[in-house]
Length: 380
Figure 1 (cartoon, one colour):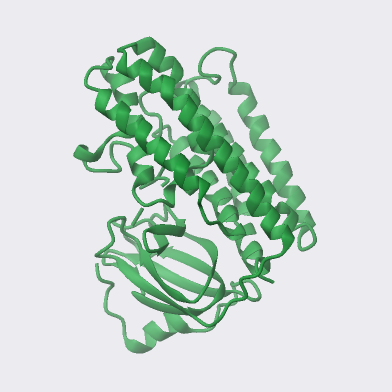
Figure 2 (cartoon, rainbow, N blue to C red):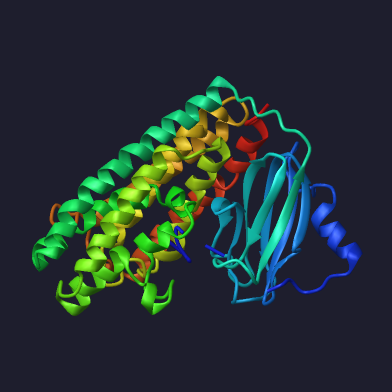
């Protein structure tokens, strides 16, 4: 989670009326895929620019640029409190994109998790043919099954972990900690869509106010840094309740094929921005466990939508499949038979992390092309 996590978002600087119209309402740029509308948002110290945007119903490609601020590094599109799509970790000098297919309505644009300052509005007009092909419906149904399976396993893996914490069994709790992390990291983009649920489960210490720091990582800190389970009962109980809430929400989650494609991309972003730095599991150092789980989740999400691209760009599909295998091959030397299944992250050298970063970047570059193509064909 980069709120990062996982997971999410002042009034914009005043712009001249003409500049606002060009930025928010102009025709799609040359960079937008055929049939898609492109909207460009810039992150500044004042928030997201523009604060008012409009687009016709249908596929929209959101381009996010950092205009030189360290205050805001993400953009989210929300329907009520549900995050439909987002792009995180847009630091100074970088840009990123994501795609959505939107129906007529008004949506919130946030670059600040709490909303308020930094929140804008996107107005989508016109009618959208919401009928989907059997192929699209099959992709969504297959991926939903994967989500349900992993959230059910997440609950079942969290229960014994919580029980060990509450019983004061320090060593047992440490042994049980990695298992639920795998299930969670595979599906984190979907967890992030449910408002503050992801931060309640997976926030790191610097992601939230000290009084709000709970979930897996608060307990991880106690187990490894503080060497105790003392005073962790409440955190453990809340963690299990939040995981069970996630399981229930996933059963009724509404999905677009393009959101699945976005999720595949977001999981790789998780790897390249937090797992590769060792900051995610900063106390237990089981980062490579999370690393592989993110890649596994990304691969399943991609495989769900890959059949929708077979006719359009079979070459790209094959390249992405090969790049996933290259990532697994790069991870292989660090696997062990002992707990937690990988060497601990501090054992890696700079050359090791550089090598892993290279294969992830190669995959991420190609995978970033997928959402826009899926959005184009989702309602065709």
